[in-house]
Length: 311
Image (cartoon, rainbow, N blue to C red; front, side, top):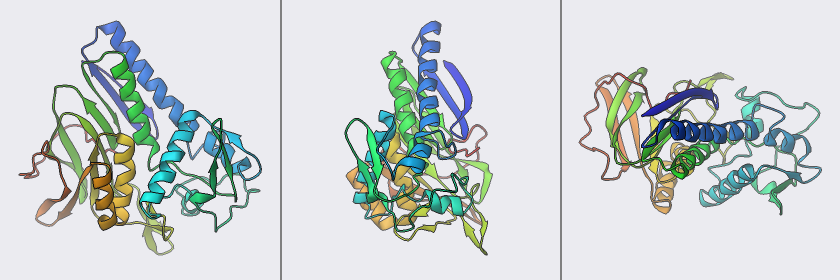
C-alpha cells in the first residue's frame, strides 16, 4: 500500500492506494493531490484570488468565468437548495463572515442582505453573474466534491483499491473493508468504532471543534439557509452515499432539519446516523442505514486516526 498525507483544504488529506507498482502508484497519488490543490485554490472562501473571491468582487457587475469544477459545484448547490426547500444554501458567506468564521473581503463591496441563492445566474462558457451582490461559501459541499475527483484519479490509474480521506469526508473503493471510526461528540478525543465500510463515501458534520460564543449564544459554521441562523447541536451527523459530494452536503440538511433531510436521503439513495453522548457513554441513533454497516453497534474505544478529524 502506498500512502501520502498532506495539509490541504484546511485539514490533513490522506490518499492511499493498492494494486499499482510503485511508480504508477506515486503518479496516481500526485494526480489525486493535484485535483485537491485545484479545488483548494479555486473554491476557497478565505482567499480573495479564488473564483469565489472574484465573484464576490465583480459578480454583480459582470459575468465572471470560473473553473468548470467551480461551476459544477455551484450548479449542484442550486439543485440541492431547490430540493431541500432552502435548507442548503451557499449564499450565506456574509453571515459566516459576520460570525467570524470567514475573513472580511473587499470592504467596498456591499452585500445585499436580501440576496439569495437564486440571485446566482449560470451562463454559457462557465460564466456566472449575480443579480445582487452576495458572498458564496462552498464549505458544505466542495470538500466532498474533491474527494470524488481524487478517487476518480486513482481509479483512472487502474488502482485495485484505495481511499481518500479529507478530514471528515472520505471515499473508499476495492475489495478491502476498513473500520468506520468517528469521534465521540461528548469527548472528541475518544474514538468510536461504529462498523466497517468497503465501498462508498462517508461525510460527518459536527460542531464540537468549530462552535464558539457569539452575541451571548453559541454559533457554528453550519447555517440553516431558511433562517440564516447558525446551528448548534450536540450530536454528530454521518451520511453514507455513493458520492462524497452529496454525502457532504446532506449532512448539513440532516443537521438543520432531520425530517426533511431524511426525505432527501431517499432521493440520493443515501443513509445516515447520528452519534450522541451522555453520562452512560456514546449512543448511535440510526436514521437510515445500509446493510454493510454493523448495526449491532456497541460503540467501543479504538486507537487510530478518526475519519472525521477537523484539524
